Amino acid sequence: MQKMSVTIAKRLLRWIAWAIIGILVLNAALGLWMQHERLVFNDSTCEPIGLYRLLGSPYPLHDGELVEVEIPGPAHHPAVAEGLKYHWFPAGQPWIKEIAALPGQTVRLSRAGVWVDGHYLPNSQVDRWTPGHRHRIVHYPFGTYRLRNGQVWLYAPGNYAFDSSYYGPVPALDILQRAKPWWVIAGSQYWLQRGD
Image (cartoon, rainbow, N blue to C red):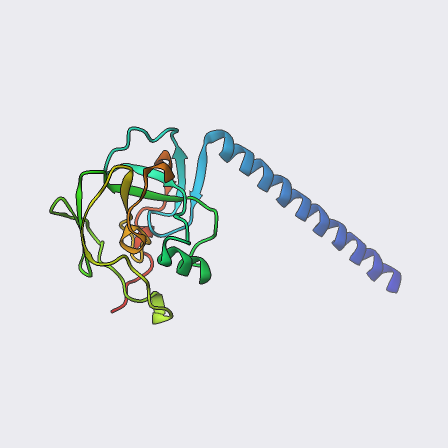
């Protein structure tokens, strides 16, 4: 009886080992395929969750265009430092955002939201608290800004979207590539429900 249970345990361990190897191989194959297809996975609800295809050089930049962007440096952006501290997003993983304004355009930021050259950006109100009121959220100072050469204002329409409303304009050099949705879950940027 004991011999039989040892044999079953060995078989079970062998199956588990093969399952782990299979998962690792599948994961590596998926990663290689995504790299070949120039796809990135966005798990943030700033934009719809899903796969985005990277399209290469973003230049010249256009407002309204989706881009992959480097995370702004936390040393210069208290909101980014706060987000990294509380693990709201992983360090080093680029973001998918929309360019809302380019050099020469005027951005007005208030608690009620963002206006670019007088046009309101939908669902852009500035949140005071994280979901569940766990942490106060640092935001960029309210006011009116005219973007200088080399600056862009980033926007994301999702509930609790983390965009330039919190860390301000970013250097145009932080824009890595243009992007477009490849397969996304429509409406997933609104899954997190806003509180009061």
